[in-house]
Image (cartoon, rainbow, N blue to C red; front, side, top):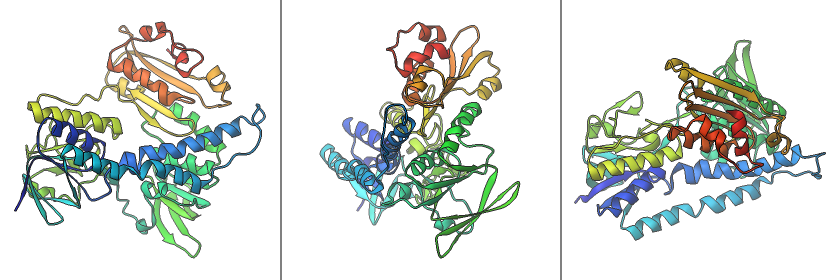
Length: 448
């Protein structure tokens, strides 16, 4: 006998939780399904635990920078203690979420959800039917297709390490590689990054990434670009990574090899063909309302939808849009204007709005203001040499089209630029704003 619901939500991350809660509050019967502990990537194995590690590593870095500037003594990371502190945040999450769902009358199912028809699923022998289904199953590491791929650990496994090996290789050059390499290096590991592309962090402006690379070098991180990993072999002492570069074959001995080469929607186990839900190149085919173009009963949100940037706030935004469309009919579209993005390196790098290349491609007329600001008070008072900005401002209107920052506090300051872009504020309006001083935000007027 089937269990009947108005909505079945696949996944228990940010998008799933927001949508399930909103729809249940409107009086619909709701079921939520996950084959992993409830909580999703961000809370359990992504943003939150990563930021715990970044915070500790940042403290070590700050202490080192302030040597000979009034701070004495040597600090170091105690990895087991840091791991225990991180778990004090992550361990309670699944039980808290399950309790919350139960209190709200949301039915929870554990196991793999597999579609058996356009409106039906099977979860470990339980047959479920619903008027609507929401796929919010998150993302998974992309397949690399190289010999020895099984020897690589994921970012999730890195975050769960009880001890940190001495020699670590990061395969890839995006957020995970950049952030985890700084954490590991400040914890005392010897880190090598092997990146197939021409540079790291391709979603950020090249000038700012170049400035940030000074910190990679200062931390002793060996960054090898234009280098493609071809195989990973198990040895008696660890692993041997073989890669190809313009200079020839590269061989590196490592104790740990980390997959940091990107993620794709986690759709493979859902049997979407049985639902009549079309997929192309690994992505759900969705309309402007986050609804399947081939099965109107199915919606998607967050990393599973992949219409907006793969960020937690976008997942929450998508879920709100889907919830409104389910309740009101398809009248709401996601709005990804002014979504800020941050790589939590040490110091962080941040961006919002258009890059210079994107603004040029759109044929917009703009002025560019770029500068390295290592001699500004914000940088000097933290003894941080990496600090800079790049602003893209539309000619005539004065609208801020893009803001790009690297250095102390930019993970917070970027939100002010996001507010400006989303609300069409001008550079003049921001310059006239009186910010508290001395803060990172008090530099905004000088950047514009």
